[in-house]
Structure formats: structure tokens, C-alpha cells
Length: 113
Length: 111
Image (cartoon, rainbow over all chains, first blue to last red; front, side, top):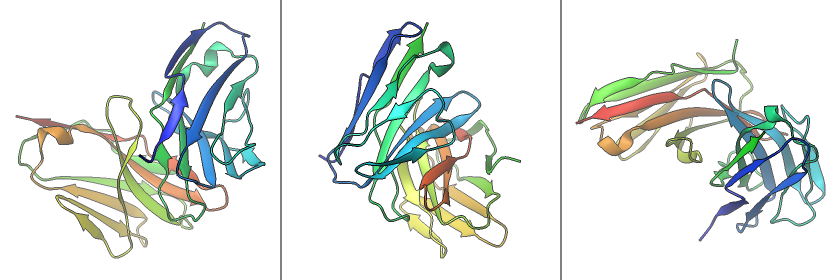
């Protein structure tokens, strides 16, 4: 089954404790992206990757890092989480050509205390 | 002005009704357009792509008006299961492939 898998689905942690949210897709997609969703602000792009070893900033990259060492994986790293990073996070993937829709993972709800 | 604007609703309609949502976008160079559906803060799921000539998928019809920069979604014969938030999505930066989301329109279909 074609899917985008995120882990963990839920996490409550404390300020400053490094965390990683994993994202994996089994569709051999070149493009992967991270979004966060906040009430009243909708979904906003954090980082994206056009292919292995090619990553770039989205609209709200501050406080986040990503890596793309393998085509299927695109982890999101919060080196020193802060309460304003409490949000619902979605990973998405698609083929590289622009008219194809993106497929989303189930989401990760992060609470930073 | 927001890049993609939608009426947040909620639209409360009876079962069987026809309902239409509009969405406007500000970037005339936008390349691709989609409607996504999102249930109760779950992941957005693609409902349908929107093509220049208009397209239909069962009870759903999507249209694009590039001159006026708006997209529409028509739902006929509404079902209870159609209750959700409908997100208008525009690809505004082909290089970055970022999806720009509208804030969503909430639909509640009532028995």
C-alpha cells in the first residue's frame, strides 16, 4: 500500500530536549516536504527536498533542521524545541513534476512544555 | 492580502443539498490547483485536481477561472459523510513545489 509514515504520532516533551520526527514514503517519490498546521494560520511549509541530498527552506524554517540521506526518508529535527513549536506536523511526498498532488502522512502532534 | 482565500464557513446544509465553495488566489503565475479534504485535524487528503477545462468526479465538480483567479468546488446531493473542512490548494512556486493552503471551508451536512 502506497503511504507516507510519520513517527511518533503524538509526543509531549520539554523545552530544549532534542527530538526527531521521522517520515518515510514507499512510493519512490523525489519530492518530500514538512508542514506545520496551527489554528488560524493553516498549513505552512517548513522545509522541502527535491531529491537525495537536496534540501531547502520553506516559509517557516526557524528552529528546524532536516536531512535527506536516502530517497525514502526525510526526518525533521528540532535541536532545541520551544513551546512555540507546539503544533500538528505533516510530512508529504510527490513525484518531482509539478502538477502532481502531494500525499500526506497521518500527522504528528507535538506538545513542547 | 492572503495568497489563497476561502470563506471559512461553516456551511450548514441538509442532506441532498447542492453546495458550492469558492476560493481566490493572488498569484497569477500559479501553476497547479487542488481541492483537499481534511477531517477533524487528520491529514489532508486529495479530493481532486482542478483542470483548466473543469473536471468532474462523481458528485464533485471543480472549475478554474484563471482570468478572475478563482477556483470552485460544487458538491451535489450532499451526504453526511461529506462533512469536513475543504482546503483550496495552489502551487505558487513551481521550483519549491510548496502547496499554499487556504484556511479551509467547513461543511456540516445535517440529516
